[in-house]
Length: 79
Image 1: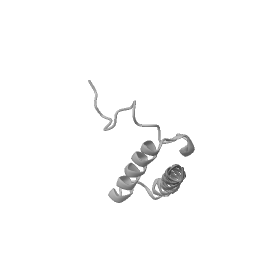
Image 2: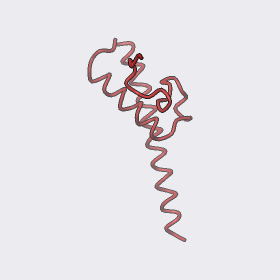
Image 3: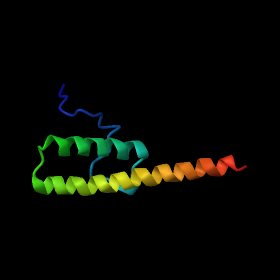
């Protein structure tokens, strides 16, 4: 039995999945992993730049998701 991966492959989406296709939870998990990698300093400069760009996309996706959820809640409060 090999347990090299820290995350359950069934719940973790692939890092190359389109950001727009991710749920909020998936995007947040990837963003946390990217931050940890960048903070550790273990990535090359090129990899760090790629991770940073992905992180910005993920952060924007999460923000949009939360904004949409807030708008939905506020819209339902009016009725």
